[in-house]
Figure 1: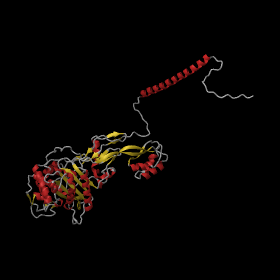
Figure 2: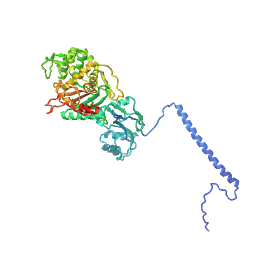
Figure 3: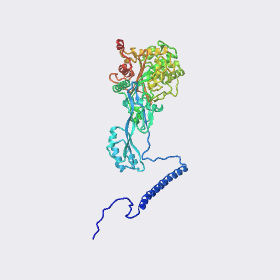
Figure 4: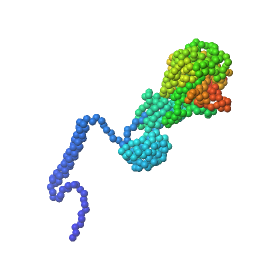
Length: 567
């Protein structure tokens, strides 16, 4: 007879059997947990002793360097303050951007991954990318940093294993090309490498950060007026097209404070693609190059005659005969057939007259005067060093004569504009600045007397309004403009090239009490039907300046006389 199976019961681990003494069962239930507790305590003690022993061993080994292994490097970037113009318009700021990286140890197929990445970003080097992705001993490598939202989406859509994103600050420039030569560039770590951006680093206005965030520093406020800057750029672009010029530059400078209100160099460059700054045709012509600027230098020669030689505007110079230095002859392009007054030397742009002044002054006095104006030493602004002036290695009487009428000494347009401002603002030297000044800085030094400055202003005004004046096409109804033309042949192999010139116009506004000076230059203009094939500054740079002043006058709080009179 089969026995019926009893159901399985789950109960205490050790239950008292029927008939067993109750006391023994109780003792067993108490002592077994106590044994487990002692075993647990012993195990914990053993672990702590091992940790303590390891700690003592490391301390005794003398290693004072803590090593940290990570799958990716600890990366530091920099956050920067905003840059704004004098009216608060945004010129540069940081935005939160994605950067693409790879973990080669996780990449499954280096060749396929590299092929698909390069298809999305053709600017990358496929061979180098394939080599790095195939190194599975690496755990981190950058692929492309500072992606735009469109680029980030394109990378995300690849869906490749081993790729990832990190957030970093990226510098963006809302005005893009318009202020690129001044603002400069940053590198991939958001550090300034040129222009105002580098200046911000030099004065310690950046902050290190492991992740992007907004800078708490006050914006850097430039002296630039964005509206004026745009007007200068647009006017110069139109002039380049009209006269088929290869380049152009324009400066608007506060004649008293030295603030740069506008500085334009064309063709321009993209600040977000800084390698383009190395292209010769896109280098900054305002500060980055030196040029012989032609007859606008006669403004300086006029100041030399008035201040150092004690001449007056009515003093007579016999300019009827050319000047001869061995095989070199300096003659007038349009001989007047009579002696000229000192004022007429500037008005008619007489090379012979300028040469006579230089010969009378002598090289030491001429050189000292140019040095006093700041034309011989290298200039520096917040946007970086200005190109060093090119001074003749041998400066004798012939070189003194050619310098007097605008050849032989090459300076940057900004440096000349600053020196000429000291001639017309009452005689006080100014230092150009790109940063807005809360108060007008005191003048650095007196370069000429107030009387000399007044005479220079008068001669510049007469150059524009006189019927024989080379700057008469710069005259603009309602504005009191003074100025001087300059057409400089450019040096080349075997001498100067007469068909390759820089046409410039230096202007003062208003002429009787200048608040601003302007310097407009057209590089290698061509003759047109309107200029009858000629390329002189009086026919291209002078009318370009008039068009520009008509646009920017109201922006500079300089209304035409008919409007100001009505007000």
